[in-house]
Image (cartoon, rainbow, N blue to C red; front, side, top):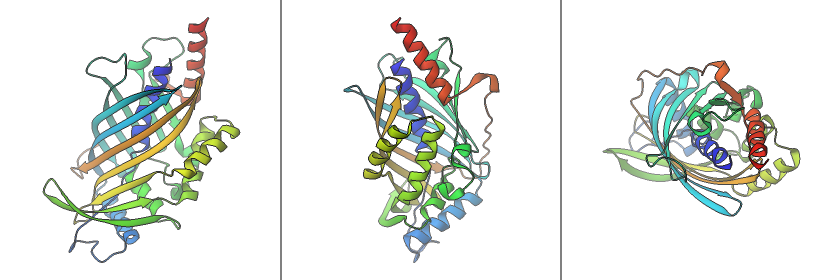
Length: 298
């Protein structure tokens, strides 16, 4: 059961981290702008395109009880910026017990709701349903400055515009024949603390454990390198983050490196919620995991 929990956390982290950003080159629409101004313009330009396709690669190191596992995820999907929605299909490899070709995990984002398909992980174990959901919009309210009411890349850009955010220029690079300009960004720490605290509250994590996690989070806040093309569109984002997540058997440490690229702006993207009777909340999942573990021990 511990493996199932780690797989779920790994899949969810891949999308949870997937909040996009920007870049550009001399002579383009952001030439002469400050890094903060450039990211703000990129947010507006990208959002006006309404949709985009995405390619995702992620490398995750998971530590539990002194044991370390390395997980790699690759996949594709689509973002609907106008509806704050996304649908990604990720192939997960590197975990003992998985088929040689890995396991496929689907993650959907609709408004403030995140859904993760865990059917292939839990099979027919009693007490489980095929999908897990987390209601981020309820957890964080409707304050868009928190930037995490959805996985819309422009939400993250809006967060970076908040007072206290730090954005510095990285220079330029060429990707697929297109010159991009990069920025290294650390969002407003106080806003990030509000966001993660709201998520932990929604997951039912005790206050004492939250304080420990918050101390760790403050010491190592997540940052992102972002890249935008000459038209002001987000083309690539790289994220590095280290977090500790409570689970029924203790804690799981996650070290995540993720790269997300965007193309085919304006292409059709359709995202729908799973059937309600196939979905369990994250607290319900934790309870089912505890019950399954107790049953296996007994």
